Image (tube, rainbow, N blue to C red; front, top):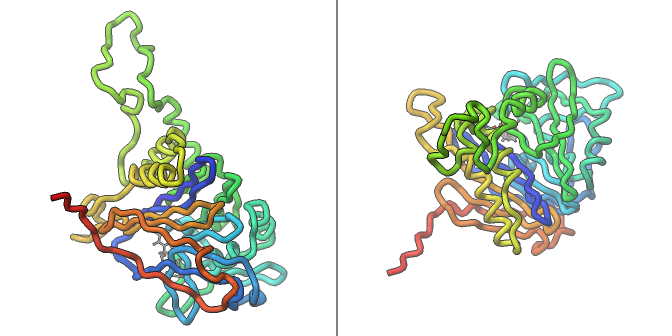
Length: 325
Ligand SMILES: C[C@H](CCC(=O)NCCS(=O)(=O)O)[C@H]1CC[C@H]2[C@@H]3[C@H](O)C[C@@H]4C[C@H](O)CC[C@]4(C)[C@H]3C[C@H](O)[C@]12C
């Protein structure tokens, strides 16, 4: 499972938890402005916005899981197994393969509004990157540095682009159903509720945190959607970049998957392989991993973005304990 959020704190911070049972060997990849990006059914992009994010590289192509661009647009692909449906190439449409969608949008959109325009005539084409890397069933969240956010879902009914008023995405079911389900938790609150069930009976508030007594805590997608929304909506705004990115990771940790809790096959468990988040205005990419709780960062603007070759950083996966004696 995965969870993606946009967190407002003066600047906006965007990223995700990547939950899976295997580490795919991803790296932090910067696609500079002059890296020729090829698309199966669309014209090549020789010059475009620079991108930074988590990705694997195959045949010199960045297969981004999530990322942001230099204009402050962020995008993440999350599993959508079941409802996801991609279509044959269609004449008269902008045919984009699912694995091309993140690089395509981030290379060309400077805002969520521009992304919407690009998607207006899009068809997510059922093309595989290769026999080994077949199309993954995904849906996507796109957000920008103004705080705008949309969800993109290609189902049997066609391509849907929804405004995302909570700035959260997890997995199944379809996005409108996640919002309907959220209504069930209208009463969840950081403060203790009034006794409305039996006002004349003394029902003591015997514990702190009463307002979130009915907050779901499961690993499933609906539970994470509700919990991440609650955590995000009530997260404080810090006074510095460090405070803000610290708050940001606390939100994602509220829906982190610990090893051993989500068995997807005998003795095989899904877990939060990495969490990442970027300051959309500053172009700084932060991440932690399951093994390394320290927050690491890569600033895209410290690289020469006018170049034409992919730039990669190894994911720091080693835990460094600060031994104090
Ligand atoms: C599995 C990842 C999503 C994590 C997630 O949502 N897990 C929830 C599982 S579930 O709901 O509980 O079943 C997705 C996110 C981005 C995906 C990758 C990117 O789309 C880039 C390429 C695309 C290729 O077509 C397939 C390999 C791949 C490298 C994808 C592998 C995999 O599907 C990734 C890594």
